Image 1 (cartoon, rainbow, N blue to C red):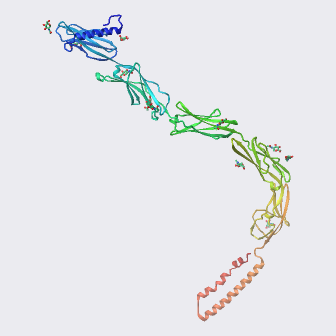
Image 2: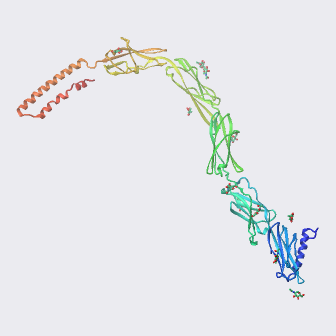
Image 3: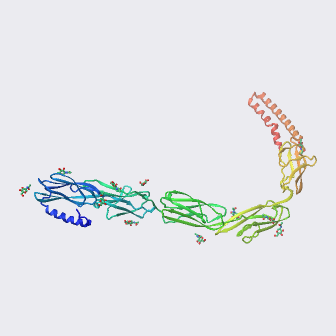
Length: 542
Ligand SMILES: *[C@@H]1O[C@H](CO)[C@@H](O)[C@H](O)[C@H]1NC(C)=O
Ligand SMILES: *[C@@H]1O[C@H](CO)[C@@H](O)[C@H](O)[C@H]1NC(C)=O
Ligand SMILES: *[C@@H]1O[C@H](CO)[C@@H](O)[C@H](O)[C@H]1NC(C)=O
Ligand SMILES: *[C@@H]1O[C@H](CO)[C@@H](O)[C@H](O)[C@H]1NC(C)=O
Ligand SMILES: *[C@@H]1O[C@H](CO)[C@@H](O)[C@H](O)[C@H]1NC(C)=O
Ligand SMILES: *[C@@H]1O[C@H](CO)[C@@H](O)[C@H](O)[C@H]1NC(C)=O
Ligand SMILES: *[C@@H]1O[C@H](CO)[C@@H](O)[C@H](O)[C@H]1NC(C)=O
Ligand SMILES: *[C@@H]1O[C@H](CO)[C@@H](O)[C@H](O)[C@H]1NC(C)=O
Ligand SMILES: *[C@@H]1O[C@H](CO)[C@@H](O)[C@H](O)[C@H]1NC(C)=O
Ligand SMILES: *[C@@H]1O[C@H](CO)[C@@H](O)[C@H](O)[C@H]1NC(C)=O
Ligand SMILES: *[C@@H]1O[C@H](CO)[C@@H](O)[C@H](O)[C@H]1NC(C)=O
């Protein structure tokens, strides 16, 4: 019992001195007559306890309890006295004392107070932590008693990473772990263990809220940016950005920019490789750049490429007139944009950016001629080509090609024939052949069956708005079986019959002498079969 007004510390000192004296005095009687119950109890801070002092003595006197704690009598008997102690917040000793037969006795009990930690908290983890770097876990533990029985455990999931005593108030317990890829998404936590098993109580755990770790790997090697060095204004191209060794690749952020304008890439990941593809449109001529940025965790990598946007007007070939008459002058001009080198077939090579010119006197051979002009533009050391051709049309009068029109034809009656003949000219002329006598028409290039009336001289005429040309063609149609051939055939047939008659007479004559031989009769007919009129006619065909 501390006198009122004394500070707690001093009261405690006085109490301890007093306890010493009591122990010294009552040493003899200890353990025998006076008992304290419960002995050395362990209880949760703030709890209540009834302490019973009892003495094996016929007439015990002045049984009392010495304590710093608030005590309230809780009943007594002849040989005992009980006291209730409440709001026990600190560990302390209590002493029972009493007199028996005139001598003082004491007994002591150690009250141990325990309390759970008020705070067990794992310090926040960084939002992203690089793989292969040490991560320091820090756990804050406030409160908790007795410290000798308290330890802190740092956990990765269920796995114990470190176990340490809790020192200081509040205590900070740390552990270092090497972050691995497999730690991505792992839950870290911190727990305290108050082990009161030696005191007949259990093991009490308090666990912090888990914190999830996100690990990442972004190697130092540069990104690969695939983009063409030049791009024509108004066109578009595919741009690819490739990053290797990313972890976790699907969580990487990709940004692509073309000359300050954001592109909208689509990213796909496969293993540790991320590929982003975007379509870049070139809107303005000039030098610009294209960049790709891949961010993961709190780091990023960038790649950049220069891009030249150019405009290239394809060469324009201009003919002074697209359709000219023969012998007139035609000017051919080919021009393209500035800085473009044009080259026109047959024309001298002009200066850079200047048009190429050609003058010609149109002839029949120039009809259908193609003028080819190529334009070459150099952009950043690269040569680009664009080509144009234009066709010239020269108007000229009809011409019948003697080489392609046979002027003397011999045909056989009733055979199918085609009259072949060609005429040139621009515009293409109409070709017609008329029989001079009858004025009948023979169609050129169309098959027909020849009659004898087709014989004669024809006038083939090619006509176009540019004039006309004529060529005489003679056709001779021959009869199919002329009388001459029939006479020859008749003579031959007569000769044949005579030969057969002579042969038969010879055969029958010899038969009457030697008897009948059927084999010989068969052979007698052979010459008849060989002399068919068809074969005779075939020999006559020229
Ligand atoms: C105190 O102890 C005595 C003797 O052991 C017992 O008879 C008595 O009932 C106890 N009193 C209380 C309140 O427990
Ligand atoms: C218990 O004791 C503490 C100081 O040790 C005091 O602050 C608290 O008010 C007390 N509680 C009760 C219920 O008496
Ligand atoms: C108490 O003391 C008296 C003498 O003073 C003695 O005769 C007696 O035996 C003692 N009783 C016990 C229980 O020790
Ligand atoms: C991580 O910490 C351990 C000791 O805790 C040390 O041996 C190791 O070199 C550290 N590793 C890195 C990458 O800092
Ligand atoms: C970590 O905890 C979250 C919820 O708090 C859970 O969704 C996740 O699966 C846990 N991760 C592991 C690896 O257990
Ligand atoms: C600590 O754990 C005990 C039981 O193990 C529980 O009764 C107590 O409320 C816990 N304390 C905190 C702060 O969670
Ligand atoms: C890109 O162009 C700038 C000038 O505009 C030049 O300094 C730089 O070297 C070029 N980069 C590459 C990779 O060619
Ligand atoms: C082509 O040239 C002719 C005359 O030289 C000119 O009248 C015409 O405008 C030119 N056409 C083009 C497309 O330049
Ligand atoms: C062709 O060009 C020449 C000059 O180069 C010019 O005198 C002439 O009139 C041009 N002819 C035509 C048909 O445009
Ligand atoms: C244009 O012409 C040039 C030179 O004749 C040739 O090398 C190039 O392949 C051509 N380009 C195209 C697209 O036809
Ligand atoms: C020949 O006569 C036939 C009718 O028998 C006639 O159709 C044809 O046009 C004539 N041909 C010529 C070239 O006279």
